Length: 351
Image (cartoon, rainbow, N blue to C red; front, side, top):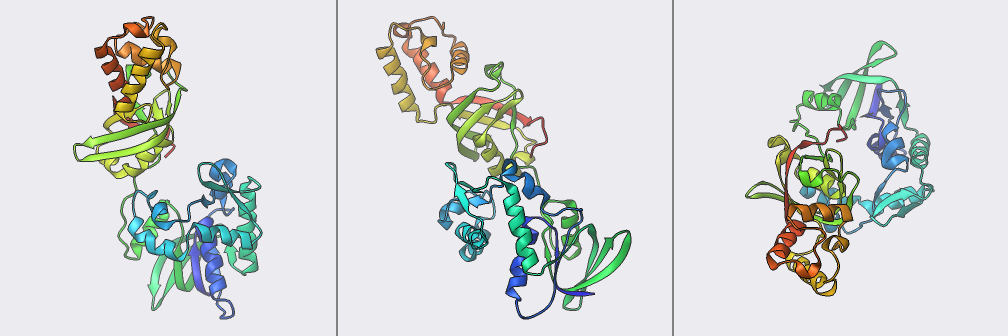
């Protein structure tokens, strides 16, 4: 049997490609077939965004949008010039699905249900007459003249499928890389991304669950290899997590893999320049002079403040007016430049 276009992979990318391909060929004939190895399509869409499906991001300025991509921004520029986040919003709107933007820019269906996106994609595929076949595993691909010949296993039987065009939409699975390599593509080995950091530091002991809303973090792997991220920071049982850490793990994914996930974090717990931290501490000394140092935490959780006072060898019951200039300097350094060693990835395989 022969298809005009064969698509391997029944995830969001596969469905979107199949629908776009079929609509582009409207009136010209030729089947578009989508092969999914499992019994159910769009499985990962159902759990995306905690079951709500974060479809895209509310940023329609392409240069600014590209700043969020650790790698490949140059290649993506031409892609986004043809189809960007605004087009994604419009695409779903034309099919009756309204998206909403949340405070952090993520966009979800107004229903807050991934099923809305699944239904939209499956309905659009059905209307476009995309032929979806489940439990079909592509074992091998060969070039066949100007087209391709696919060897597939379906219901225990091996059969051959020919196609004029082929789209691989297999995600990060090994099978897709293998098929691409067989066709002559060079594969860059993938490495983990979006993971937490294992940090063993006495200053974090017992602080599990503490979060800081606006930290500024620098990851130092070498003198000329530094990565920075701002955002919420969370202390865990094994180290550090939160959006700022996850962002660093993405931007430095390959470099961290090379260093066996070891490096140095420089943490600014307040996310403001050191001179401002120093000014803030001097204000505490002047305005809260008779209060104990421990009772006035300058913008960090109380338990973390206690731990930083311990690290600075300052009696927590000492009054602010009694804090020496050298002690203030030490506190400023701890608040603005706490150094901690990363000794590995988080203990869970969440990447």
